[in-house]
Length: 406
Image (cartoon, rainbow, N blue to C red):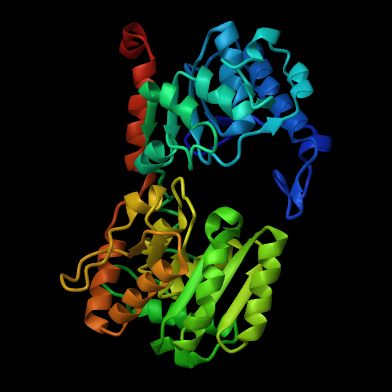
């Protein structure tokens, strides 16, 4: 048991053979073989803690398939109300049918109206059906997952539950991501004084031993999980022409081994212009957000996305696919009007991504326009305060009038 600033209690569940590992859910080679055991145990631990504490919680808010059994268990015993957030429909917690016996749930729940999907146990489906409120990380994603493609097989299930579905945009921590007070970056700067951003760019170039001539040329960055979802194959198609246009690119991330190898190979082909660092480095991610001119997010789909928000906070304009939370957070730049906060493209095609990059390069050449766009991006509000107010309404809506009055 621990306590956060403000007196918020935090409980931890310990079982070293399940949780004392180098990665959360799996290695770059794939998911852990015992993930079903690990997260069924976790959900049962939540329920056991509730019993021990006399169910002091009015609402339990669960996230993704890893906690999706908690709303199912609550539906069987009553007590606390449940909210379930889907952060990514692509990960569903699908396991062989014999795993169902580990849940301890009544056999009738392993059926078409319960946790069975395509012959397997599907934990995400359980959270969707048995929760009392259902949310996603952005309004657009809430609509997208009701369709065939981004519903990932469960679109029909979502449509049947859409009466309890709401999309609430995620936020970022404005104390952690603040260019005026960020301890990781070379110089502070803010919307009214951008001089420090150039110092941050020089620091980043030196960190990666790139030519300081790029101070006046476009420097692209990407901080991302290197997975199928993130559009790495699409990115690979535009890297050669990007290099030929005299731009530089810095990538920080980790994920699928095939993408890690591909990007490292490409970086070795452009040693004067491209750097790839495999891993997670909190300090370096801040340096990249602060020091780059543009950030790349060519995602196949994006339930919310946080990097575009962090980038805009630091005056780094995002190039994004028009999907999910990227649609909801980035205003496409109008070069004639001088308005916008980033550059969008629609079709998942190299030509479409390159078109957005071309528009970004045109804008970058017009210094006064570019600085105006930076300031517009930095002026956006993606703080958690806005999101928290919406979640507060969801929680209050679950409680009875008597509870709300109390």
